[in-house]
Length: 167
Length: 68
Image (tube, rainbow over all chains, first blue to last red; front, side):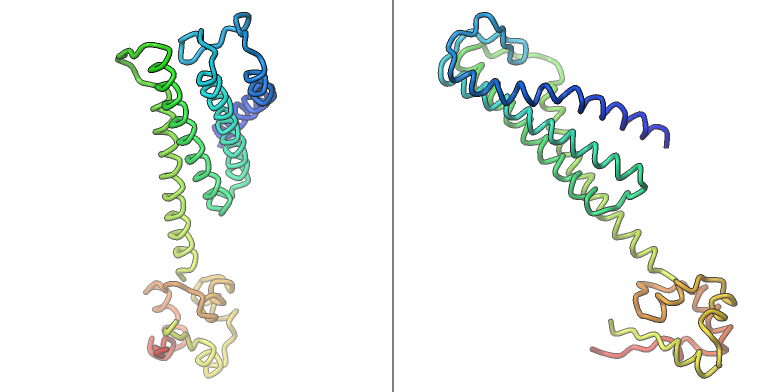
């Protein structure tokens, strides 16, 4: 089970690095609405530098910033799941609940960001067709996968229980 | 559950303890306890075979169906 130790270490490092992001996210939202001039701070949405700072773009930016908190919470839940796996509590109720929550959070994060990017591009940017794998769509698939995984773990737990009670 | 396990009755008739039976049929006392208490979800034929052989009885002596 060495792989799980490596994964847990990486997730722990990511979690520690993400702490400043949480603080920045919480500070940036009120700053967006107070300040009107962002020429000194280049802000990008999916490679497009934001040039228009009206109410709509500020709302979009705020929503996208807050959605990062969803992502960070899912990272925290994943950390807890890995800790339970290391303690060999594979089919614990907390694992099942957390896997489902991670899936829901990732799904919401990707949907919110897809919609916000689309609205921003329609209003201020340009619509482009690109032949590539959209990272947000990949995140959406990952979110749905975690929800499916939660269901599969539930089936596995029930089967294990039945097997344990077979004499 | 409508299926009732009468293992205690047979053990008393044969004057055998649960621990002895568990050792003879090679299962743990914990598993035998699960069986006796009715918490078991299923029983393997091999286990049923071993119990009947050890207690010199029929499956019907151990397993009974009582409608709710």
